[in-house]
Length: 486
Figure 1 (cartoon, helix red, strand yellow):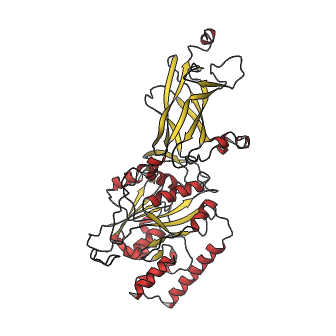
Figure 2 (cartoon, helix red, strand yellow; figure 1 turned 135 degrees about the horizontal axis):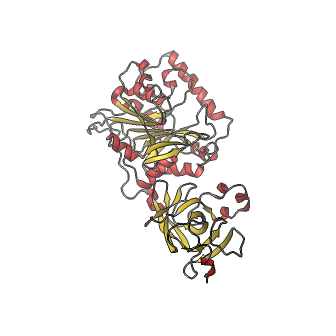
Figure 3 (cartoon, one colour; figure 1 turned 90 degrees about the vertical axis):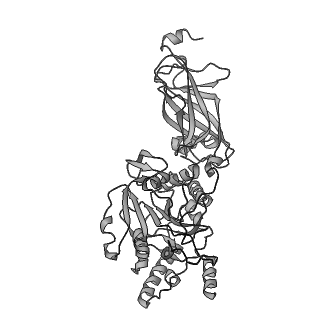
C-alpha cells in the first residue's frame, strides 16, 4: 500500500517514475552512474539551451502533464547505459504492454479481457531504429513492429542482430498523409519535392489487416499536421493507446505556425489522448521541433482497443464558410480576355450577377476574380488548410491556374503585398471576413454563358460550405463580339 501511494504521488507531481525501480530490478552502481550522467546532461540542456524555441512550440513545454502511472522510460541509447543522453521518446509502461489477461487492473479488480497482440506503427525512422530497438529489448517478438519510410530499409535486417533476440519487425516503403495516391512531397525543409505514393492511416490499417494500434510513432518532417488534421476531419479508425511524435513548426518549417501546433494537440486531446512528456531535441532542429509523448486517458497494459468518441468528427462539425459569389470583381489580363478596348490591361470590373450581365471573355482567356467570404465556423481556417476544386459537371475545360486567399485585413495590406503574395495569406479566425483571389483559363468550347461550380475543400477532401459559381460569357470571336456588344 505504501509503495502504491508513493507511485501515485510521484506521478501526480509529473516526475518520471524510474522504470527499472518500477519493474523491480536493482541498478548496479556503474549503470546508475551512467544513467545519472545522462539525466544530468539532458536536464541541463533543457534548462539552459541558448537557441530560442519557436513560441508556438514553447507553449507546449508549459502545458500540464498527464501522469504516467506505469513508469516512464527513454527509448534512446540512455536505456542501454551508454550515457549520451540520446535522441528518443519517452514511453509509458513499456515493459507492461500487452500484459496477459488475469493480471490486476488499476482499480484492483482482476483483468479478464483477452490480451490482444501489441501492434506498433513507426513512421519516419530514416535508418535510425533506436525506438524499434527499445521496443524489442523490452517486449521481444511479442510486439509486432511495422516500420514505414520512403526509401530502402537502410539496414533494418541487421539492426537487431546484436540484441540476440527474436524480433517481429516488418518494413513498408510507404508514406502516410491525408489522402491516398501520388503526391509530390517535400521530405526535408530545403529539399526538392519527390513524388511518392501516400496512404491515410485508415487505409494502411485496412491493407495490413489491423483492428487496433498499440503505439503510433511518427516523425515525418512537418507532414504530421496533415495526418492529424485528416483524422480530425474524417474520424479516427481507432485511437492508438499511445502516440509519440516529433512536431515541426516555424522557422525551419515555414508552412506550419503555432496555430497549426495548437490545432494538432487539440485534435489529439479530443480523441482522448493526453500529453505526458515534451522535450527539445538535443542535436538538430533545436528551434523548430519538439518530441511529444501522448497516452490515452484510459490506457491499461492489457487493453488494446480504444474506440473514438461517437458522433461526427470534430472538424467536420466545426468548419463553415459563406462565400458571396454574386458580388465579384473580375480582372482582365492582357493575354486574350475580351475586356473593354478603351482600358489598358489589366483592368478590373465589379459585377453583381443578379443584376449585371456576366463578363465577356475570349475562349481560353486568362482572367482572375476576387470573391469575399466569411468564416462562419467555430474554428480558424488555418493557412494552407483548404483549396478550391471544381465540382459538379466538370466536363468544361476550365483550369484554375492560381489561387490565393487570406484575412481581409492582411490581404489588402500594401506592405504584405509588396513583400510577396505568400505574405497576404494567413489564418482566418472564426466570424471574420476573408478574400479569395483565383486565376482561370476559360474553356475553349462553344460560345455563350458558361457556369462552373467551385468548392472550398480541405487537403483531405472535406467540403466546406456551399459551392460557388463562376459565370462568364464566352465570346464568339475577339473581333465580332465587340462589334455587336451592347
